[in-house]
Image (cartoon, rainbow, N blue to C red; front, side, top):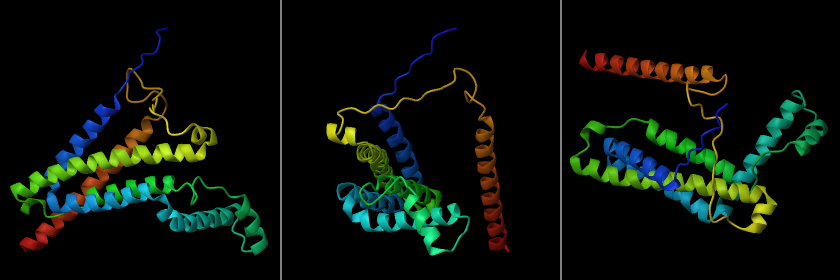
Length: 219
């Protein structure tokens, strides 16, 4: 039986790859749309510098999620005493002291919504596309940097031993089970097929709507 092969990917290479991808998309989207995305990422960057600003919202969200969990755990009971018991036992992976899981989800949703919407890309000038590529480059850097910092700070808040030791000078992530052949190393091929099917269905519906709109416009 052959020994497993270990592959190392430099963080710098990953950053450059993501920045290049965002730059390419930025050229296609143009300056105005990329600038809006940059403003949103700048707000998330401010929350990274001052996480206490997100404290009240995260605290409210934590109470709401715990209440929903208590409602389901109590089998839809409306008795205040029963709900209070399950509410106190409910645990969520975030709090006002550790809002980073919420910030990761917010950033992911913002990027998906920002880059998933369509605009008047055909009307973008050459200068607009050039500036869009520059801002896309910046946005790619901000996204990967914010994600890295959010994850590291979440782990530091969650583990007292890591928090006492301080922020590590280097941080490594290991990916296990990477198959030498085939798409997956386990029985998760159905998940890949499901994702592909959803994407194909989305593209078909999207193209159908665009065709319907073009026919109405020509009529």
